[in-house]
Amino acid sequence: MLDGKTKTGPMVEVVNVTCGYGNTVVLENVSFSVARGEVFFVVGRSGCGKSTLLRNMIGLQDPRAGEIRFDGQTLSGGGQRERRKLLRRMGILYQSSALWSTMTVGENVALPLEEHTRLTRAEMRELVAMKLGMVGLAGVEGVYPEALSGGMRKRAALARALILDPEILFFDEPSAGLDPVSARNLDRLILQTRESLGTTIVVVSHDLESICTVADRVVMLGRDEKTLIATGRPRDLAGESENPHVREFFQGTMTQKAKEV
Amino acid sequence: MDSRIKAEVANGLLRVTVVGDWPLERRVPHWKEVLKRIRGREGWVKAVAVDAGEVGEWDTSLLLFLIQANDYSAKRGIPCRMERLPELVRQLLEQRVGDGAAKAAAPGASREPFFAAIGERFLAGQRGLVEWAAFLGECVLGICRMAVRWRKFRWMDSFSTMQQAGAMALPIVGLISFLVGLILAYQAAIQMRQYGAEIFVANLVGLSVVREMGPMMTAVILAGRTGAAFAAQIGNMKMNEEIDALETLGIQPIDFLVLPRVLALLIMVPLLTVYANLLGVLGGYVVGVGVLDIAPSAYWFQSREAIDVNDIASGLIKSVTFGLVIAAAGCMRGLQSERSSAGVGRAATSAVVTAIFLIIVLDALFAVLFEQLGI
Ligand SMILES: Nc1ncnc2c1ncn2[C@@H]1O[C@H](COP(=O)(O)OP(=O)(O)OP(=O)(O)O)[C@@H](O)[C@H]1O
Ligand SMILES: [Mg+2]
Image (cartoon, rainbow over all chains, first blue to last red; front, side):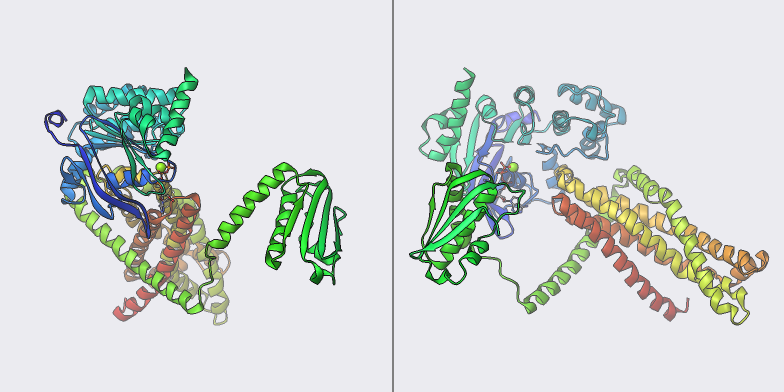
C-alpha cells in the first residue's frame, strides 16, 4: 500500500486490447494507462462495451488480444499464486452490489480478510466495524443483504471492496439506481478514499455529474468505432473535441451544469 | 363485415375509407376484408388510397390496418397513398416503414435442415460430456486444494446444507418410503397368496426396499428437492454477479460453493437411505401383520433372514454415488446458468433431469456390476 506511492510507472496499462463474446468483437485495439492515485473514468454510450472492458480488466474474461498489466504484471501471465496476490490488491464494486446473499453484511465484509489474512476473529470484527462506519453503515453487521435498500447495499459492497485497503479500486456504474443525493455522497466517498489511502480508482459510468466533479481523466469508448474515441480531462473534452459524438455526450453535461446555475 | 371500412374500386384505384372509432379492445378489421369486398375486381387495382379523414377515436389498431395496406401494395408493387391521416399516425407509420425496410434487409432465420439438426444434437451431447469431465476435474483439483488448506473449508455451509437437505427432508423421505414399502407388500401379497406363501412377502419387500427402492426413492426425492435448489441458488448468485465477486477475490466457486454441497450430500444421502430402508420395511411390516395376518415375530424373523449385510451395503454404496451425482448436477447446472431468471429456471429443471437420468443409469450399471460380483 504505502510503497505504491514510492513506485513509479502507471498503475494500470491496457495495451492493444481486443475483447468480445463468442464470435462478436465488442472492442478493438484499446490502449490507455492509468497513473497511480488517479481517478480515471471510462465513459460511453450504453452498450459500447464499458462493462466488457471492466470484466477483462479484473480477470473475469481474458482479452482476445493485447495485454492488461497492473504494476507491470498481467493477471493471466503468472500462476495461481501470482494471480491471487494481484487480485488481493484490487477492490471491486459491482453494478448489482453482488453481496453474497446467504451471508450477513458483516460476514460479507469479513470474507476477504478470512481469505487473504491471518487476523483473529476479534481483529476482523474490529476492522469490519471500522469500514462499515467509514461508509456510514455502522451497526448493520448482523443484517442480511436482502434487508438493505439499494443504496445501503452499494455502501456495504464498498466497505467490502475497501476492506483489504486495495491499491486499485474498480467501480461499475456506482451511481446507477441511486438518488442524486446518495450519488453525490458516493462521489465524495470516492474522493475521500483517494485522499486518505492514495488508491487508484477506475470508474465505469455515464453519470455526467460524477464525471465532471470527480474524474481526473476520462476515456470515451465509441459504440460504432469499437474503440477509444477520446482521452483527456473532462473539461477539455467537453469544449474542444473534434469528434461530434464526444461533444454530444459532454454537451449533456454542460447543459445540465447550466440548468443548475 | 366491419362497418368501419368502406372500399370501392374506380378507374383502377382502390379507395378505402376508414370511419368510426378504432380501439384495440374491439376486433381489428383485417386488410383481407377489404379484398373480400372487392372480390373479382382485385386484378384491376393499379393503386391504393386510404382515407382516414373521418376517423373517430383511434389507437394502434388503426396503425395495424394501415400497415397491412402498405404491405399489400408493396407486395403487389403498386403505389399506396395515405390521405388525411392524423399527424401522429403519419409519423408512426413512417417510422414503421423505416423499420420494416431494415427488417427486410436483415437475413431471416432459416429453418435448420434435418440432418444438420441431428448433427447439432450430437455435438451438443459431446460438449455435455466434455463439460462434465471438466467439472469433475475441477472438483478433484478443488479437493486437492482443500486437502492443503482444510482450515479454509466452509464447514458451516456444509452443515447448514446437511440440515436443509437432510434433516428437513426426513418427513417427505419417510412418508414416501413407507408408502413404497406398503405398495410393494400389497403387490407381493397378491402373488404369494396363490401359493399360500404370504410369509415371503417379508423377503420380497425387504430385499427390494434395501437393494433398490430405498436408495432410488431417496435419491429421486433429493434430486427434486435439493438438486434443484442448488442449481437455483447458484444460478441466482451468478445472475447477481456474486460468483464474479468470489472469483475476483481469488476464491474458486468450486471450493466455496460446490465442495461443501457435495460433501453434505455425500453424507446425507446414505444416511437418509438407511432411514428410508427402515421405513420401507416398516411399510411392508404393517401390511404383513395388519392385512395378511402374519405374526409380528415371524415377519421380523423372516426379514432378518432375508436381508444380508451385503444387500444393505450394496444399497448404501449406490446411494453415495447418487449423492455425488445430485450435488454435482445441481452445482454444475447452476454455474452454467445464463444470467436471467429464465436461465435460472432452465438450470433448475436441467439439474433435476440430469440427476434423475444419471441416477437411473448408475443404478442399471450397479445392477450389472453387483450381479457379476455376486453381491
Ligand atoms: N454475455 C454476453 N454475451 C454476448 N454479448 C454480450 C454479453 N454481454 C454484453 N454483450 C454485448 O456486448 C456489448 C457491450 O456490452 P456492455 O455490457 O459491455 O455495454 P456497456 O457499455 O456496459 O453498456 P451499459 O452502459 O448499458 O451498461 C453489447 O452490444 C452487448 O450486446
Ligand atoms: Mg454496463
